[in-house]
Length: 288
Image 1: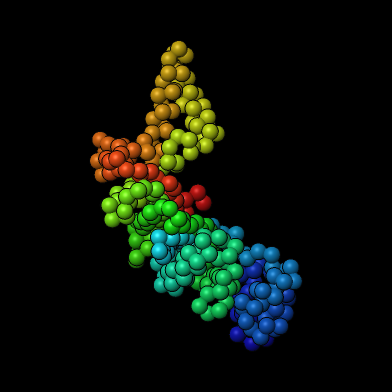
Image 2: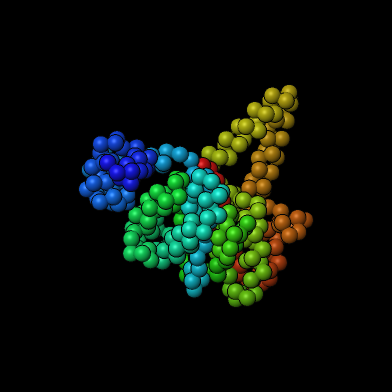
C-alpha cells in the first residue's frame, strides 16, 4: 500500500470513526476521493456520524445578507477563533449567507442548495471539515421579509461588512419613511446587540421562566432571614425588575439611560404609528 493511499485511509478514519478495512475499501472504490468515500460509507450505513462532530464548536461567525429590505442571518460555528478568521472559512460563511437569503432562512433548503462549485452546501461542508480539520456546523438561520415593515441590521465586532460575532435583525412597523427612522433603527439594533433582551415586552416572556425566577428570588429571600410577611412584596419588586431588565421596551436606553426604549419610540413616533414588530439576535456560541 502506497504512503499516499495510507494517508487517505488514516484521514478517512479520523473523519468518520470507521474501521481501517472499510475505509480502505471506500478509498479504493472511489479512487482516493475523500469526499466520495465519506458518501460511500454513509450510503452503506457504516459512517452514521462524522467523528469530528462529537467535538464542541462554539466559535465561528454570524453573517447577514440583505436585498430589497429582505434580510437573512446565519450562524456557522468552528472549534477555534483562529479558524473563524481564516479567509476560506469567511468566504464559505458569506456564500452560505447569500443562500440563506434566497431560501428565506429555511435550513433544509440551504443545506441542499448548490454553491458556486455546483456541489451542495452539505457536500462542501464535509470537504471544508476535511481540509481545515475542525468541526464546523451550520447552526441556525433566520429571515425577516419586507412585507409591510421597515427592516434594519447590525453586526457587532465586525471582521468585515456584515460578518462578525453578534448579529441583529430588526423589523419596525410604521407609517413613517425609512429615512425618518434610519437613526432609530441603527441605534435600536445596537441596543439589542448590547442589552440582549429576551422579548419585546412581558407578554413575550416564557411563563415557566418567570415562575422559575420568582422561585429563585423567594428562596434567596428566605435564606437571607427576611420576614415572611415582606418576602412576597420584595419578591414581586425583584421580579418586576427582572422583567424590566429583560424586555426590550422596558430596558434603559443605552444612548440615554434616563429614558426607556418605549419612551424613545414614543418620541420618534410623534403622532404617527411606530412599533417594533420583531427582532432577531444571534451571538456566536450562545447556549452551546
